[in-house]
Length: 340
Image (cartoon, rainbow, N blue to C red):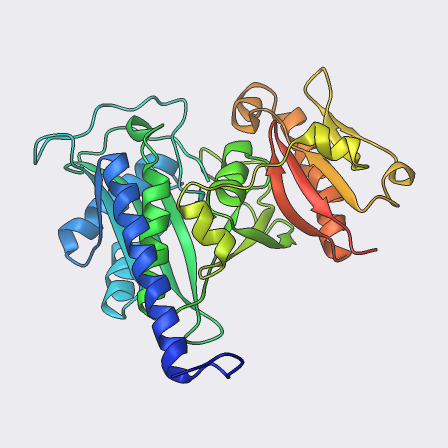
C-alpha cells in the first residue's frame, strides 16, 4: 500500500500496467466493432495462406522477391510472434469481400518491408480485409517491430487499419511490451496522418533507401527512404489517440507563431525548397509532402523522384541534426521542432 509522498510499490506498478492493458483491449474491441470487423491473432495454416494471398494482391511483388513466405509466417507464429487478421463481420460467413479498385488500397500504415498503401483486388480470402505481421525486437522483452500491414481496397474508409493497430497495441501490452516500431514512406500523406495523428506514433530516424531497390507496383524506381516510428504504448497521448482524442496542428496558427517553411508543394505540384537561411533559426519548421505521391508516380515518375530527393534533403537533415517531428498538420505538413 502507498500513501501520500510514498514510493510506488512493485504491486502498484503491476496494477497500473494491468489497467493500461485492460483499457487498450477495450479500445481495440470498440475500434473493431466500429469498423465492422473481428480482429484476431492467426495460427492455422489456412489463415496464414489467406494473409499471404492478401498481402501479395496488395503489393504484387516480383516473383523473385516475395514479401514474406508461408514458411516464415508459420515459423513466426510458432515462436510466439504477431500475425493477425481483420475479418469482415458485415458479410455472410464464407463470402468474399467486394472486388477492389486497382487504383489503390487503404493501409494500416504498411510497407512491403515495413508499413504503406497498396493496390488490392479480391483475393478470395473469405472475408479477410486486412492483416498485420510483427516480430519481437530489441531490447528483448520490451518491443515489437511491425514488419508489414495492409488493408484491401474494398475496406477503404472503414478504419480497418486503425482496428488492426489497436489490436496489435493491446496484444503487445498484454505481453508486457512497451513499444512498437515500424517504418513507412514519408511521402505518403495519408499514412503520415494515420501514423502521427490517429495513432500518436513519433518518428525516430530518417532511413535513406532503407530496403534498397524493391521491384513491386508501389516502389519500383522510387527508392525506399523510410521514417522509423516509435509507438510508446503506455503514453497518455497514445491512449488518447486510440480513443479518438487526436492532437491536431493548425499550419496557419503555427506560421503566425513563428514557424518557418522549409519545403512546400509548388503550384505545379513539385517540391519548392526554401533557402536554409530562412528557417535555420526557427524553433518550429514545416515540411510539406505532395498531395498524392502514388498518383504522381504513375503520372510523372521524374517529378515523384524529385520529391523523394527533396524530402530526404530537408526532413532527413533535420532529423539527423537532432530535430523531432511532433505532429502532422493538414494539408500535408510535418511539424518539426528543432533543439537549437
